[in-house]
Image 1: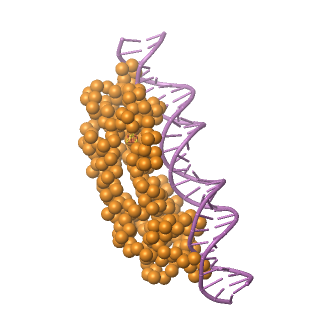
Image 2: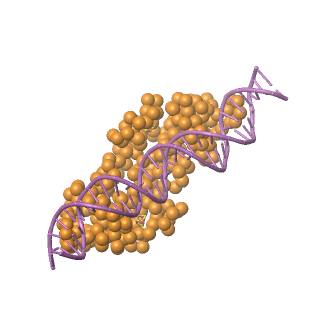
Image 3: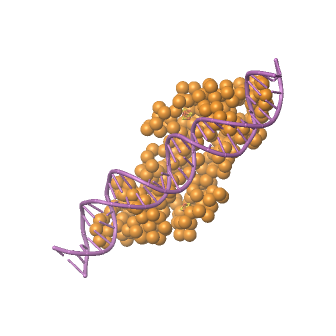
Length: 133
Length: 133
DNA sequence: TTAAATACGACTATATTAGTCCAGTTTATA
DNA sequence: TATAAACTGGACTAATATAGTCGTATTTAA
Ligand code: SF4
Ligand code: SF4
């Protein structure tokens, strides 16, 4: 199937919400409550966005998250990278299991699949989170 | 994740193989052997292609499959439709579980997600199996 | 009559995704 | 300085989707 994961959706929802709040600090709990997103899961997603320096966090009472990148600087492609690792439309294009496909030797669709991956990447690379309005 | 299923890959591999064989009849077993694809699984994929009138089949001894559509008439989009059902990049865009997302009410990314789905569909619609060369 | 082939439904196994639990650390403020 | 609100992070479980298997039936050329 070709489907975005909930984690990616949660990231998009959160980024949009945080961006709307201007410079106000937003907590994971607020987002979790507002959008019915499981708190622990959301927390992990936000932590990843922090590690990638998309968000900035403050711990402790009155802590929370703040945007430190513009939404138009974050591509859907990079967001997926951050959350799920490098996208690969087939097994043999994913570094982790690049050698796992037992068809590989005789496969007759590798090159078109490569092209397809390239085109999809391109679409995602030019789709900015700011477009999500 | 965004990944094509093996079934779709098997369909592409098979179609390309059958097309290369010109009007010769090709059996599931031949494809299964040549490409190391599990026979039973492949058989089901070919049966679906037959139901969609992409392939024609003959039963019995010397039976097998033959193309009855041009590869440039089959879009990747339609192939995915046939094998996996209508593609939906998120839950709420899939008829089957259109009402399952408990975020739906407050969701702030529906409209951009819609656009994204449209653009992806468009990409897949214009990607013909014949491009897979 | 037999063997090679498709047809099809039900089943199991594996992998991925989604979600939970728990035990931290940090920090404002009462 | 005690407390509670918040982030951090690893290990775990549950749910779902994908991949593959099994068994049986049907068709048909030779
Ligand atoms: S080698 Fe061919 S069949 Fe195997 S993953 Fe790559 S494209 Fe798919
Ligand atoms: S409603 Fe929003 S969160 Fe739910 S599936 Fe649709 S896009 Fe995703």
